[in-house]
Image (cartoon, rainbow, N blue to C red; front, side, top):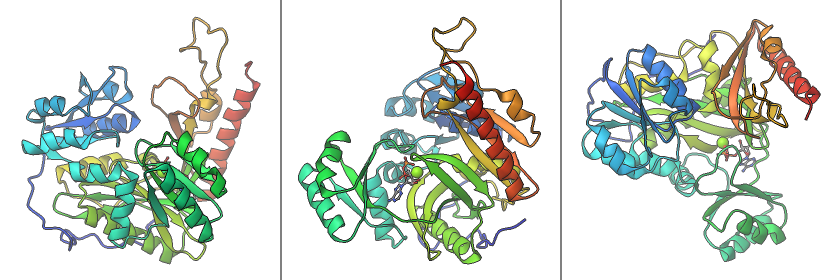
Length: 420
Ligand SMILES: Nc1ncnc2c1ncn2[C@@H]1O[C@H](COP(=O)(O)OP(=O)(O)O)[C@@H](O)[C@H]1O
Ligand SMILES: [Mg+2]
């Protein structure tokens, strides 16, 4: 099952000068900065590919800390910490935008391979730089403004509503994820309240895009500029958080081609090494706009863990190490559904057998469907927190979706029937 794809060639980077970088071979050690589930799945992939991993994160019980060969309990964004370990590892990568670029620069200064680079990390962690980068390189992006004061907020709201915007969305330039740090503004009169509510910090303000769908395109790119694009995923968000990803995405060949092209051009202009995940909106006329990007594995890519010839995590490791990047093919249609902390029943008072006051959802019923695989990250449940995901495969996309829908309905019903 192939999707239309742009050919992968080792020398298709017209934008940057490429300098040869040696292949990093197993059993080299890769440092993963950050302790979340993306890091744990990266550590898992790296280990079975023969690499050793060192996770640097604050807590020894972080998901990635438990999967890595070694763990250093320290601030992964501290340049002093990173300079101390940089000579002992062959590559350094990140699993979150929260890592300070200065920490990556400290490792670059001593010649360790760092992917993403401090330059890329600087851009992807600040929506102002991200959107400006896209716009200045003629990479399609929706209307946006940068806002850094209450007066600018007011002026921008008046301007965008005056231009015909029906709603505008203010997003903090830094630190936002899963819809956090965002506020919809429906009239110019709501602008000041939004500025206050978001903490009077720099913002990017966007016009609402009336999309017909959301997709993501993940590109793996090597130090030599060669690239391989993963299948395009269709994403459904609820309350700003990814709810479900479907692979393959039901898109016209023209939209698929446009999306893949846009993601690859973005990766080239950024000169990224490793994965670049590009979130996009699909417009009613089939055109695509970039929403945001991440230089790391992406939640939507989890679906590849069970239903593609390579997982996104294997592709990230292969790319940063300079291994050949194979084409990633879909093995079977699949749906990934995120499991949020809301599904964990809260006990009151907490029972001695419970986990921090939480019982667990009824996995047995969900797993009775043999097409389901359950991935749990081992985190403490909290409202809206990503706790794990389910992947359902099927002979057809409809079958996979029907199984996923049945599973999530079962979990929600079970939750609703629990005593509060
Ligand atoms: N300009 C926009 N117009 C319409 N919906 C948007 C817009 N920006 C974001 N959204 C919705 O909010 C979700 C989360 O926004 P995003 O910018 O991706 O932030 P996050 O970093 O939290 O994922 C998007 O996936 C989309 O569903
Ligand atoms: Mg997003």
